Length: 226
Ligand code: 4H3
Figure 1: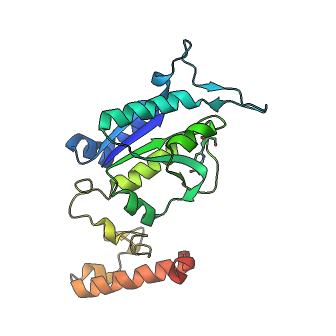
Figure 2 (figure 1 turned 180 degrees about the horizontal axis):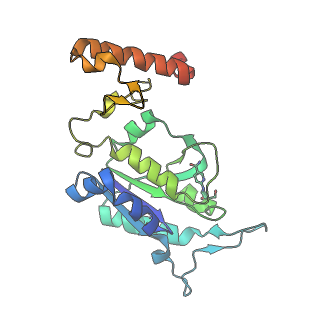
């Protein structure tokens, strides 16, 4: 999997993508994630990437040309046309199921807008789909792009330690995950459920299935109806 992120704030993205599990997976080569500064692709002598909206109104709009030139440079670099996503509150809301599908693409291009948004013409020209991470507005598409990258990357081979099966976690099966406990055995007078200390693998598996159902029924009954 190869993810290309186009943004005016590549350092912001790099900071997150260089740490922890994703950082390690990039170093080992399990995934490739590259951040591109859209400003590097402007032809304007003042390096401008935005301008006032036609028709008037507040704020600035990101111009089409630097974004298009950035996208073209990436297409050339990788020798293919990546599946191209614009992170936007107007998109379809991200789900685990959509993240699984996207993890099978060979390359993704994630366009992060800023200011009041992006000239519609470059969206019409390069974007295959718009994705939203929820019904709220942010100052930029960087956090949504990082959320999407994280959700996809952790399902790619070699990213999570083999012993950790992401298939068992919340939302993968359509259920929420069972509660987890670690040492100490007693904390603030509270015990760990006895079955987890029993070493009886079948009973533990049954308890976890039942807890998954109970937690889902209590916190997200809408998931059980689906
Ligand atoms: C995505 C992007 C919320 C989401 C975003 C989301 C800034 C889109 C700019 C950027 C436009 C103006 N906000 N819910 N904001 O996933 O490019 O909205």
